[in-house]
Image 1 (spheres, helix red, strand yellow):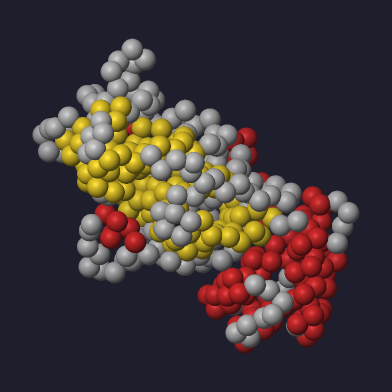
Image 2: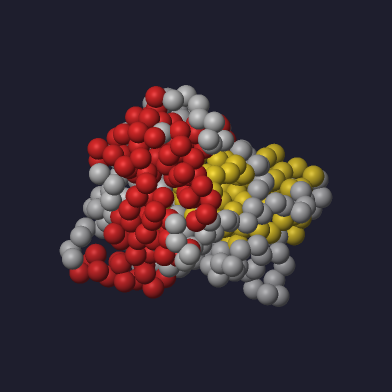
Length: 384
């Protein structure tokens, strides 16, 4: 293994992806109009990055480097909502992966929850404004939202009143658990009634325009889904470019619309709870959820030249660097994947342009760090 190398990355064409955002960022065409949802950068076996050999062929990055990386770095572009979901902690991931293996469930089965034995904490950084939901609201706020909904939709009393009663508890964890259980045991007929009311009313003075518009969009796409009212029980907000949030294990969330960079541990374990045509496993989701109110901290960069996004992760760290002509010493000693977001970055005789990514191997403590020059901005995802 030598020094810095350019990466060839794989695109994931999920149905919620954008036909424009990632192709435009990469400077590539999309003649078939496919949804480009994610670009994976790393060593995950589902879609590993590759390195070109001097002979012209390619090898996986893990083979080139000699070992898998502890993180998975992505570009993510959502034009419609991703599933409402959560990720397991490490112990849950190991147990779930082993159980599904023992049950003989193929690794590529659509009913597979655990595709590996790793947890999946993640940080999302917005490149364009990015709207999402994350974390349960306070039970009292959920109760107020449900009562406001009941006031404007009295015909839904038999459906909504059990939800109000479930969340009305002096113990937050109990109330959230009860509420979630009642919500996802609501009959299909009652779910359809809720969706019909939402789609039939263009506005609703009981809620913010953001909440109601998202609910209308969800109901139009999934007309019998219990998660269409998720803006009433999950925090709904929009990250501005450069802002980021950290999502720990067990936190219910859904990315709705936007373009960003996402860094996580090297895992693809997802437990879904709705807003998706994919497999939904509510009992298993409830096993891994944290039934506590949680509002993610919005991390806003303190510097436009260099900023390291603080997270509690032991597997990865995300940094953003902006440079205008000065030589920059890349001081990360652990292996890193860098993604140029603006301009051109030169190191040695190699130039990396916007949309291109490269791998920087681990360097010895006493070695000279690589030097980058030019006018550019880039993300650096590295091991801790």
